Image 1 (cartoon, rainbow, N blue to C red):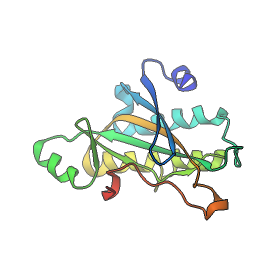
Image 2 (cartoon, rainbow, N blue to C red):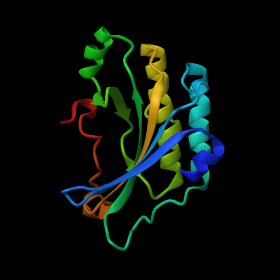
Image 3 (cartoon, one colour):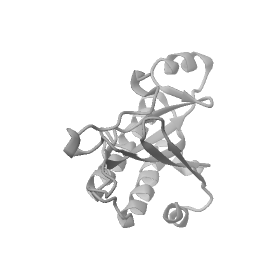
Length: 174
C-alpha cells in the first residue's frame, strides 16, 4: 500500500482481511479514487505500469510456509454500468458489489514474482487485458482495483495442487 501511495498520490486505499469458515484467509487492498487519466483507454497502461512497478520490490511469500498450505494472489477490477439496459445485461455476466460489477484474474501462486507480474500485465488473462477488454468492448472505465492475497491449508502442491477459485459470484460461480 505504501509503495503504491508513493508512486501515485491521492488514491483512496483500504485493507480488509478475513478468516473464512473453511480455515482460509483473505487479505484485500482496495484502491479507489482512481485519477481521471487512469480511467480512459489510454491511461490503462499507466495504471498497470504503476501497479507493476509497485510489485517489483514486493517480497514474495514463502513457497513452503511453516504452517503449511500456500499463498495465492489475484487482482480484480470494479466498474459500473452506463445505463439501465446495460445493468441487467452485466448482472448476468459479472459479480455485483455495492452497485458496481467486478471481474478478477485467476488466482496464481504468490511465492514467485513472475506470476504476480503476469497477473497484472498479461494481455489475455491479466488485469491489463481485462481492463482493456472492458474499455474497448463496453466503454467501461475501472472504478476500483482490488489486490487480493489468500492463504489456504489445502492449497499446496503437496496436497494435490488445489488452487483457490474466483470470488463468489464471478464468472457464474455461486
